[in-house]
View 1: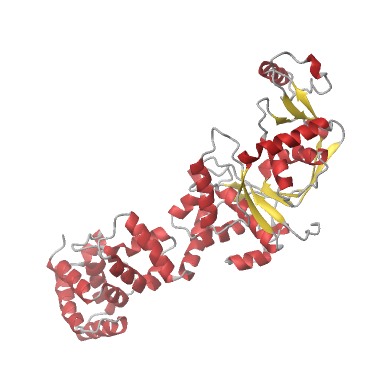
View 2: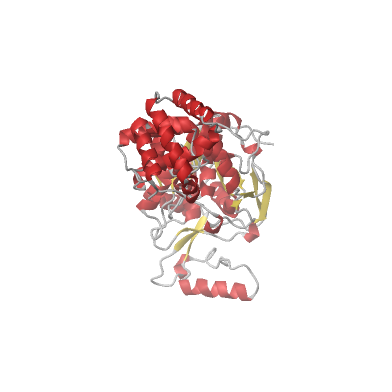
Length: 475
């Protein structure tokens, strides 16, 4: 049973900027955001950028861009862990003065020998505590000390996790972790505790690969007599085959999914249902997600990434999306791809006119862009083989006749449909026998939105020019 949630819930997403915003991290951010919003609290962002070799400004920007695209906006400016090293050192010294930590003067060679001996004896390679109760006056000259936590050695540490349930570990299995390195910089495990305390974090929601860290961090909270936040460790996301999710399965970073044409609301909707359940509803808006989400709906088993399901869900969201927004996305992609062969204002008009039909046939923005590309092309059009085959000599003569009819028609979808039906009836043809060769002449393809809408979108001059070019002979 969940504990009562305090009045002011504060959650945080705390990524390390090492090159990408992984889809697992995005789900963690989403769950933190939804939980805080559901309980009327605050969602914070902390950039854990203390790895000087791997962390870059570009990698930080990737995280910020990914969160902005997903519309997961923190309620306060991001906290950069690297700016707080003085505070981390201050807390370590307080623990030292209170007897909850001690100086360790082991050399790198001693630590290496310690690990090798433990492995040779079949023991976990942990620090053996040799400076735990030793007088610092015995320290060898010139060896800068580390500061280590004086961890509990008896009993057990218990974590009542909101997802995993009650989890225990004997304290004898936890060694005296380093708080400050010999150069005075804090370790990750120590810095996280200090930051969570100072940021008044009430709930730590993160991947279950951090669960072993939690037992060590709880001891730091207790040594400082600080309130311990509630913990919720989320099962990891696996690939479709049950193995750890990697690039061989497909996209793994948020910005890859953006590039592949997924909408942010579709990706968030999919991630929401990846490990959390509530009834049978599959399509949930952000407002519905905030209203329904709570940690008790998160399962303990790892989730499997299903790219086909995500694509299907994206198609649903695509059909619900605003046409002007989609037209802008398509134009941006066409522009980046160098496919803008017509005036941009005219391009936007054509795409907007056909968007209701175009988005019915697409599941991603990439497909939508590909299906819109014919609107941007100049004569002579490239022809797909099946489209070229439709334009037999007989059909070329027919589309010329159709062009004469269209030249006299009003160029609205309704009037064009009536003109094509009248022509088909007068010549004893089925409408499809007229529409398919005409579609090939207009688009270079065998698929498009309704032929009447396609004609109207291209306009009288462009439509007649394309028909004439196709009737005169394929390039």
